[in-house]
Length: 519
Image (cartoon, rainbow, N blue to C red; front, top):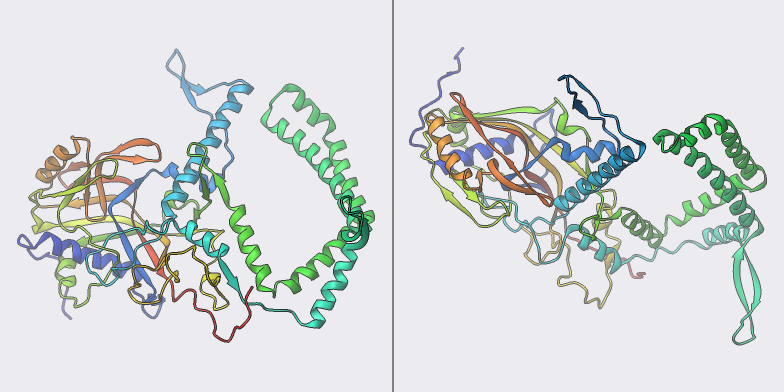
């Protein structure tokens, strides 16, 4: 039985761009290609690579697990005798620290939401040298989606006469019709008002809400220890406040028709869900409920997240290594279509301004005869609770006829690659993160010194889709991350996003020609 060689072939004369191209081919294989156990890759997915990668700190994602509510995190302080103890703050100081942390969570959420709120340019998905380009001409992903909901029509799925009669019967239990004098004309007009059942429901519900708010207010005041009185109030009166809430709830059930009202409303909702105009209204409501306003920018953004929330601190990352042996294998592959969207700078190092200005290539005179690159890699799905892709791919909607609100009549024309005038040819669905990058050259020390001279000028250095070191912007702050080296190679600690997995939309809108009535 033949044994595999452990000696890497000499590659001193390998072209840098070929080496990087082959390494990206291996990354693409690791992430996408399936077999009998792993589901094969979808032809509707592609990868777009950042050039260079975008650094993140682990704490940049605290908002995912903590939420948007600030918490007080006690700090250790040094005492005069050299020992350490937990800092002691007044109630006001503690409240101020929590407020600062709340602000930080909102800033993290806004920064992340804007980072992933992009429409990738899929016009180059057949290119072998690719990078992440963004379509800026039509706005952000949320812009296009919001305008689509606003200017779209859905199929008029009119309910049957029997269903309409049932809904009307239920609605008559919730509202009554009466005559009212028009104060301007003096004429009697018919108006709809809440039925006695609904009025009682709302009255009893409001009493329960007030009792609940009183209870929660006292509980939160005690938990945050805003005053000594608050702590005493909760300790003494908690049982009384709890009893008030229970009494109000039981009164709501027994005398406010709570179960009857909600049962009727549920039946109406179940039957009305078959009406697509109501379904679209729910999607618009979900979008509106996800809208937040940035504290510093004052601009709206739509909350997005990643799953799982603790991915940055998880130990379950995959170790990736690329050596000269891998280069020999991948150089023989006939197809290397591993990404999308424009030209990716391969092989040489790049240097650019920290504000994302123009970048230039430079040759660090690398010796690739014993090249090796390794890192941990992780794919993390992007969660957008406000985005309903099933609506965009449905055959039951179209743009309103005669609408001039869009430059194109398609979100995507369905072609591969999509035409340049498609407003949303694709969307990012997954972020590709790596951490603890190590690069080894035969002359690693010499290469490291060359990088030091470039980073020392305040620039940002990258190598393909990898961030090597230098200054960069994060939100409104300036940060820096430096590489370090030893006899084993060049190291870049920490987390960075090297690209996105993107999904190509089919033709959209693509309405069913059998639909004749639209609303």
